[in-house]
Amino acid sequence: MTRVIVVTSGKGGVGKTTTSAAFATGLALQGYKTAVIDFDVGLRNLDLVMGCERRVVYDFVNVITKEASLNQALIRDKRIENLYILPASQTRDKEALTMEGVEAVINELKKTFDYIVCDSPAGIEHGAYMAMYFADEAIVVTNPEISSVRDSDRILGLLASKTKRVVENQTPVKEHLLLTRYAPERVKNGEMLAVDDIQHILSIPLLGVIPESQSVLTASNQGIPVIVNKNSRAGLAYSDCIGRFLGEEIAFRFIDAKKGGIFGKLFGGR
Amino acid sequence: MEIISAQLAKKVGQAPSFFRHAPVVLDFGHLPDPDRIDITKLLDLVRERGFIPVGITNCTEEQQRQGEALELAVLTTRGSGRLQEDKTDEEQEEILSEDNVAQPEPTAHTSPAATVITEPIRSGQRIVVEQGDLIVLTSVGSGAEVTAAGNIHVYGALRGRAFAGSTGDTQARIFCQQLEAELVAVAGVYLVNEKFPNSLRAQPVHIRLQAERIRITPL
Figure 1: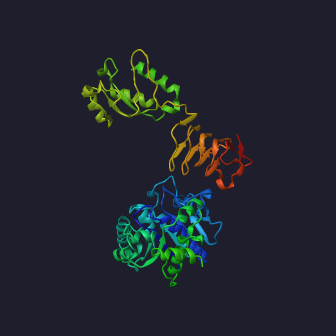
Figure 2: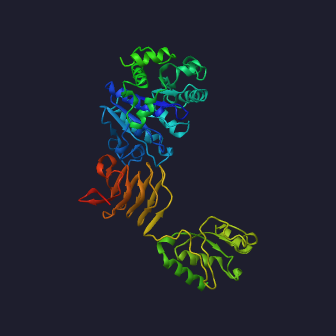
Figure 3: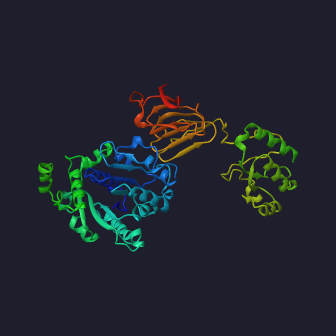
């Protein structure tokens, strides 16, 4: 049974695309056939983070408008088996995403894929709505700051009211909280919200905490999803998230100041 | 009326396809005796020449009523409009009835054989030239798209996508000063960036179709 996962946040720049890339890659590394779709029509980025920008011929909108078949538009990842990317169109706008068109693409993907990861655009408008509508699960990416938390709260409200599962009276979308750009030292100094505070406000299960890390930017610029980097704390934290997502019990790391940091650096690679 | 007709014909003769279906505003302000003009006849005349009249300006109240009845936009009234000739942004076709002195050329006057773009083409922008060549004096950004029925010349870096010969002309070519394109295509045959020869990356190149394949050579 295929699961459709939306990676969303409301706020921009919190790490949705990084997370989508890492998550899709992680699921594929576990042997699941995974497709990741860029819903950010007009501001396409996922292809860069996935390192396939030089191979884009057709895109998501071409498939919706039937100018290309899904197979023509899907880009197979060169490094990782079972991983496919459906890039967004840069020259169109979100209105090109019709409900029927998106549904047809997702249904077609469901025939052969285990997981479909939908990389949502920022905001709560049409693009974000289309990305979340068909979701079975949602990863809500949040930074430890109040504006991001409030936007996530808003998105959670929409997930609970505006998705297909709600409209059709099915079990609700399964929500996961993912904290990114977490800096334990700054939390300790009171400059950032702590994990517990955020969880208290949003009250959804915590899937993972990704520490602030230089390697994320490096990975994006190189077009290699950070999860592949076993020397990166962020990469390891994403790997943990995949494990938890698939039902494993994995202790949280990189949450505490100093101790966690040194521990992570010394033993993180094991 | 005959004078107007003759002048229109001359104007259209200079660039027939440029004026085809061009929207015009009929300006009565320069006519010596505007009250004598019959709007209905003038409209027929303008339409015959392939223009699409969209509005009238600097006319009498009577003409204004006529214009409104004909569903034309009345852009200014005679009283206020006379002194403010370039008040609207719309393309204005000046109709001079007397001596043809110092008649300004329309600012957008371009030969249909080529379209020239002087501003950088940004990511997400799409330029489509349905007739003739496209000349870009700056760069085409990553994520931008340029399409031309004829050749495409880019005098800066080509970082986006370029489609030459979009209506099927297999002889069309693409020229650029710096090849960093995401994709290039001639008459529907394409090549993605990944397949470009490494030696030609960021180089000035010339792209054409040879034996139904894209061929890239240095300039």
